[in-house]
Image (cartoon, rainbow, N blue to C red):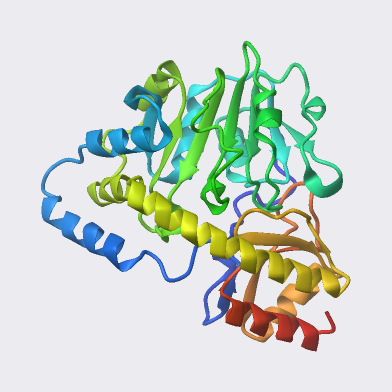
Length: 341
């Protein structure tokens, strides 16, 4: 048995929303899925009598990243990938780099593995020397949820070594124009990359993601995966979102996102708040005096933001705010001003 976690690792942004609250807590792009994607998903219902066939979607993902089809495993979202890795791997010493998405640690603990937390220091930037030499499994997000920090690809790749598996959660990498720090195309030995279509394409309810890894690990994960784990509509979405025109659409959105994110970060910093610098994903992480109290006051005024105290390495003075469109962000800023922030 492993030591019970000291924070609620199963608390996620969806628990913050509801009751008509304006959603600044869930990191899913608004106005999605786009009409063309929704239509393809609706059309796939005509094929539900047949069992799902993942081959076309797997080939599409492989082409999108310049990989071989044998290096791709399609999953029911990134969350399933973390569970499969926790079940298949047998780490003696697993290290999870925090603050980050808590599902990888939760999955490892549920599978009976002990977890060592590596909490990053100032500005939450990666120093590979902080990771214990004897760790045979390392999990890191890039860009990281909730800090929005993008680590250099070379720094992440340097974590790989014989006898160690490095799992890189790139669920938010398509928020970064050009994806310069992605390891999906390089896929160094010993590294597994996890991607998700949930955020950019608004498919949280569909569950669509994949793992990129060496064929041996992909085969082991596939053996542990339930048959037909990814539904036909999800396979259609994965294939469609991996097409060049969809990748170009996501790139255009990422450019627009970057401009509005930087503007919002500057507005918050001008009020004297610490905003984790160089944010590169679709959210900002900031330190606010009495963050939990401010969160509660925002809820009273109709706004949901993500509490930070359920992320190891943060605490009650931290909040994560999703970047929305300019008008919505301005209304949130005005409300924060009314609260003295």
